[in-house]
Length: 499
Image: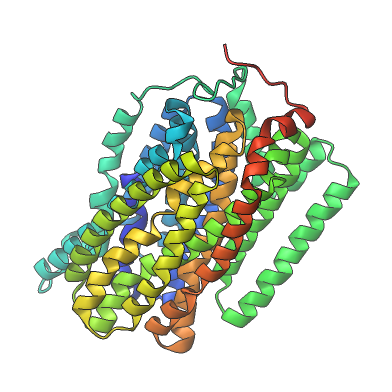
């Protein structure tokens, strides 16, 4: 997970240099970090999660790690905006293999009562990796460009390109080690076992066909979905196309809306397919109110976190006129320590609160979100650089505490055999709303308003809507968790008791 977010986040500190060398705007930078990565991360997360539910999870994670590390290194060869966008798409596809498989593997490796803590410890790699990515990127770009300021650099490479090489290539070695991890028996921690899948890659290809346009429509035909389903699919495609065209006219950023439209259509098609192929999974993933509201709440938390987290380094460079090296070192160090502490503390507190209240995990996320709002507002409005740096620490700590509670809540509401798929659906929503829209929205508002600070301030109010959905999730949680097995049986699931 550390390597996952080093490779993902490093573009934040490189943004100012990439803008100059490739001639792109803030909105396009937001697209590169967010949408170009997020849409394909989410789309391919579905079939890769299905593969994780039926195949060796450690092998899948290792292969994905090798793939995204290679694509990160290839980002350093980009000479144009489209080339860098294609490389970022490759990183997104590779990274899609990681979290659903890891959530499932870890949930089978530890007792349910420790689930939030375990997933929080795993997720703390987000902040360690993001911090390292910002720090390494800032250091490399400044040193390299300074070293070759008076003469042509080797192979014409800029510092931001060298930074991609430096963080990408070590992941190839780590992939070999990851392949040696232990693969636990699926459902072991919960005592709910499912038979082994005899043809795992056939299931993967079926899922791939169900989610990747234009094969999605063909897939529905082949599984006999019926005229009503085909008509609904066609109307969904038309609606998405019209919406993308309208938003393009307003924002003049076609790549953003075309990519997001493809992702939304793919997600709709996959849900249609899942309903016909695996009714039980569809019922528990899409018709569990607590799960729906959890996804909406935490996707809005992510909208703020991804947006603010990405634009903080450029904000400090522009507002306080610091170098990329200073911003990278200070913000990277703060993000690594505060984020690691926050996400781990959030998981531990969530498990302890849950031990006395079934809704305890959600209450931790709600409390952290409420406290983070005033901290964020002061951080973005102060003219004192030192105070702003100091406030980034509690802001990062609080804004990271929701990750363990969110992931563990999803795991608790579905059966072990569908945990990776449920995680992929959850991450799809978090990715579309958080990663595809958060950084882009701030970048677009920055262009429109001519002020990055104001753009970042406006998005902080997304936490208010997130809190509304979090309270709705807490309201339904207990009933939905207690009825999980009964609803699965009613949908046709044959449950095997513990051996």
